[in-house]
Image 1: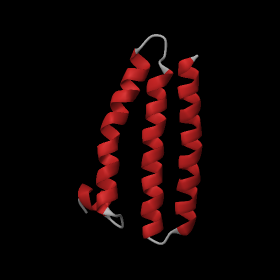
Image 2: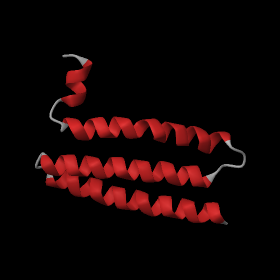
Image 3: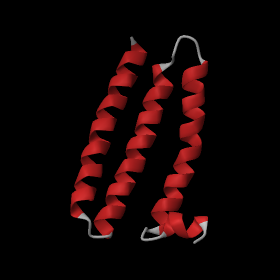
Length: 94
C-alpha cells in the first residue's frame, strides 16, 4: 500500500486536497505567531480560523461518508475553535 493510498483511502479527494492547501497558510501563521515578540494573538486567531475551516471540511466529509457521529463531533469542534479564535482576535485588540 502506497502513501497516496493511505491518505486518500475512504476519503473525498477534493476535500482532502483543500485541507492540504489550508495547511500552507496555517504553517506560515504559526511561524509568524511565535517569532514575533511579544506573541501576536492576531496571527494566532488566523491559525484558529484556518483550523476551524479544516475541521468543518472534515465534518462535511464525514457527513458525505454517512458517519453521522463523527460529522457532528467535527462540526461542534469547529464551532468551539471559532469561538477561541474570536477570543484571540479580541485579545489582540487590547
